[in-house]
Picture (cartoon, rainbow, N blue to C red):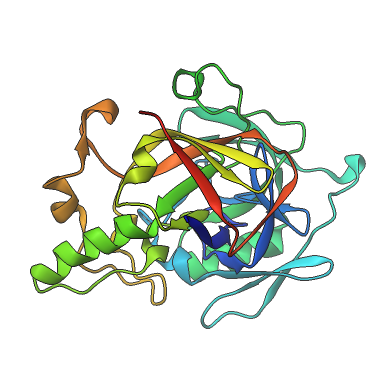
Length: 283
């Protein structure tokens, strides 16, 4: 029987994730302790989002959810504590930020936080938080007209990968005399074991407990899988191997690995590692 084997929450876009044993699944993605996936984001002086594509050291920024704060640690830096409570309206500092083609309002975190990130990344930047009244919707051309909200993710609230897909890629890497890669290089929210390699590509739905998740779009891969998430160093990229068998015409020849997904039913259900997953194929 297919099984949910990993859950990961990424509070700050493109920074380290938090492995979880259980998480609430919402239409906007995973949530734990009232913190949503990709609720925070680092932006440059013009409000454009920053990622490991250009700043691989972001992998070394490690979040931890405390009782009243989001704790951030990074090598050579003092611990940073960000309040979880939202600022009162008279203390809001709002700025417009951009994620790909979307522009949304966000809370601007304080200057101390901006200085911390700027020092560590070596670029003038700030940390922002998604505003609860902001609205960002996944592409309805891929969701079948369903309006699926997302925060600062690249475009969809969930990313699902099967363990067999990674195993298949690693077999090909090992044949080439290269090292196998851990799953965290691909930064999924949900990992499913017990299905065939790339079977998630053909899933009409994935039912876990009372939640029904629908994969909607193959995830085109960029340079981030070349970043060692433990060291922040850029090494050999698996894209040359993926190029030989994972170019997908549905995404204009992009190299697909994993499926972007939305929640069809079961808002606020709790997902737990070890739960059975009922994967219904679309054919």
